[in-house]
Length: 514
Image 1: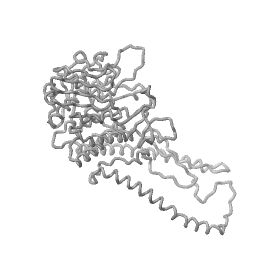
Image 2: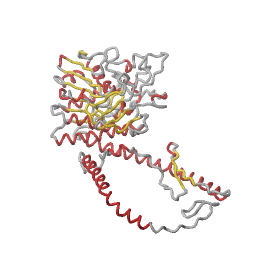
Image 3: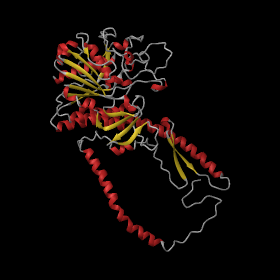
Image 4: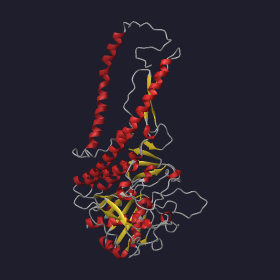
């Protein structure tokens, strides 16, 4: 039986109502006189939050409602999945969330009355259980409808953002399909020495080769296959810098391999150095790789162990690359999977949160918190580099393709052909990261235009690479049969492999700039 607020449990003696003490009016008057003394501090606090919000919103165009990055306070309180709208009522009730995948429902509990056995209560409990089954059914139906709506809403949001950051006067290179290309590949592990072992799928016995024979076909135009002779003429007397993590290096190595078909580069980097530099002296052209997986200033919690958490100073520049960006004509900036590692977040040299840290007294934040702020700081550094007169490409997030489990629980990528575009879609963290990049690129472009520049371009690798679950090394990044356990690699890309198409894109993007 549901208890009304005025009811008391059975078996408990009825209490007489106490008379109100005469001193009560005096206490109430004191409280009323005290509140105004504290009200100014409340008002000032509210004013401060409003000013911070306005300062952030000044970066955005008020007419563009689709671009609404979260505020700092929203980061500190990650959104909680909404539950069905059945608020509890009455003092004797409490609500609990019972999570079971998509069948999350609100279970309502009523405290049993004290005293004699409650027969009516058992009948009420049975009716409530039956009602909960109906609620669960309704909730699942609503969730399915909601997911379909959100999927369509996300597609619309993505296309709106892309239309704002891409050059609408040119063909959209990044919307299309993978089509067969029997002429591939254009190099092998025997003709290029820039391939690292963990990407050398041919060397370590990958049995299928169909993943090598696809090319990207945009919907509304043609994308020519990479031509090393033409490319070297485009970049004669120029330089390209890659800034990012191991996937950025993966891209650079693909470019070096493709160019090695016609010109032999000089490798000026130390074998153990994460930073790389290649020079093509005949064309006065050089390629550099700046290792910066977090894009911003970082330091290690343990200087001797790179597997330990990093400290990310999200508002401080990584001087390793930001002080050199002015020396390059083209900069390709990217970052991704490192942001899911355990990390501590600092702003103004103050610890503001962490990801996967053991400390309970530290704010536990999402990876998107650091991802957004790192890109904002990095793109601001390029905007503020007055000596940089080149073009910066933001290469978007390349999704991983683990199936059957996460990377550390046996997840693998064993497909041997691309998806069609209607067979998969961006979701979860991949969607979130992609949207953050588009939003931050838009903010950087608007700040750049206010300064009279046109520095930033979109290099959208996300849409094409979402469709290539077949292009990862999986277990073919090391010798087979070793008595060791290795996680399957569904993050990096085989060389040669689908990532070579990124240089088809790069060649076309540089043609537009020239």
